[in-house]
Image (cartoon, rainbow, N blue to C red; front, side, top):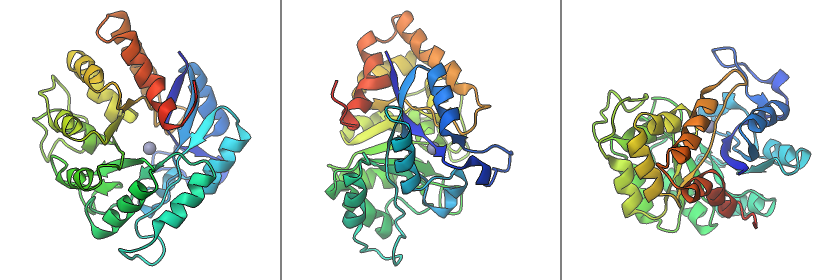
Length: 297
Ligand SMILES: [Zn+2]
């Protein structure tokens, strides 16, 4: 089955991008497609980064749209906004902005990287408008304000929970180390920003997923893939129980990365070993995303 990747960053002009501290750069469309071909991914969702905290990842709304137009059938896109956009106010009308991009074909909002508390009035205003426009939001969660890029929350994700409760029609797609470390209840302030290892003792993610039908998960990056691979038995249970609200993703930041191939083998291994059904696998790697992207199959 051809997969859909919910989480990509692609550059239009990599030669002009500021390299990251480790020297790598966001991939060009050609590079991203070559990685996708190796993974049997047909379509990737380009996520622009518009907040200053994450800007080295590159990409604007216009770039995402152009890359989709230049590579028909290979990319779809989310638009992105920053809660401080306009006049840094708590009452900015984001509906006008979101509807403009929605009409251009954007299927959601993200990846959100503004380093502001998830329940800050400006963030709240932005979530309100995303719910009004029926645009799902993919969030990168960080440890706190002044501690990395991404919307800030505390251990146990109480602030995201507040937003899930306040906006039941808003689909929030969780991503990042601070999100996935909550898969296990032994997560602490010391471990939550990294990649905790070992057997999972059911944690906050399963609780939140059960309580809030509007919470979704993004399996991309070291965070999502390691949260699954650390405990295959728990991963199989988790993927099966929440099979309708989990998306396969890569978030590969440079051609030199290889974790995505190990994760691909892990997922197909779960099917071969009959730990998850073919049906669960298909929903996660394609069908759930096809539904979100309104692809008729
Ligand atoms: Zn990302």
